[in-house]
Length: 302
Image (tube, rainbow, N blue to C red; front, top):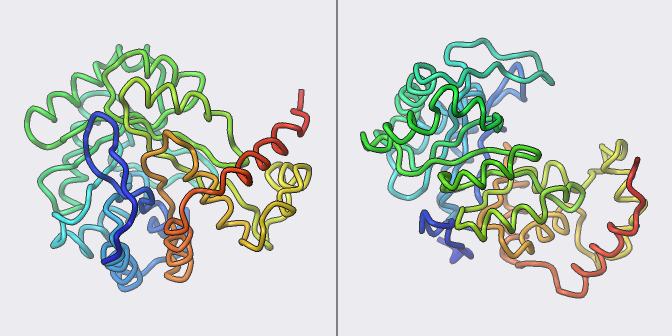
């Protein structure tokens, strides 16, 4: 097992690997690529064999929870398991590109956690995160935090978190009740760069999502605003021989207040490349500074 870099996930005091596995890619059709139980089993066991100890999933991710339960529930002591709540239990998957329905009532939250426990074949979740970052008014109306604290008291949940974005993220931090925040961030999506630090300074653990998928444009995806920003900042000129994906992952790892960066894939080759990027560490300070200077020099759209 590799000696991978770990960071303390805020006040949870969990020592998590700086690279986590995002299991959305295991959701399967119709919202994703087909994934067989055999593929999931091979991939998830390699994730654990490599030393990765943080896995993030959700009710919304189709067959993801069930595949995790089938493949690695017998290795439960080797990893921290995070899922989501507020996802509508029993709902059919929404068409690709559309958001799934959510219901933040106590009944649905409790039903969702109970369902996740069954699917994942475990009697506790290390972390339950409120999905889709609803405003504080919705949380108060449905007593969402109290519902999660009740589940925590019952031993079914160890810590509670919020998957959040601006503009509600500032309010969520101010509430002072969330142990972790899951926040989108990458070289090409830096809107939350400063607020990540504010959340960490408040004692919360920081889980970054989109640190790869919303980052480097691939050879097959050289269009859209991400690719335009990459070109305008001339980031290819600072790569110094590394691939775009390696640069993007290492840029994300360089944020001083990141604790784990969850990256999903169904490809063993891609997973191994991500692991290699992790082991190379953050970007050199001069490269990081130059990349940020170039990104900040690109005019923002009005």
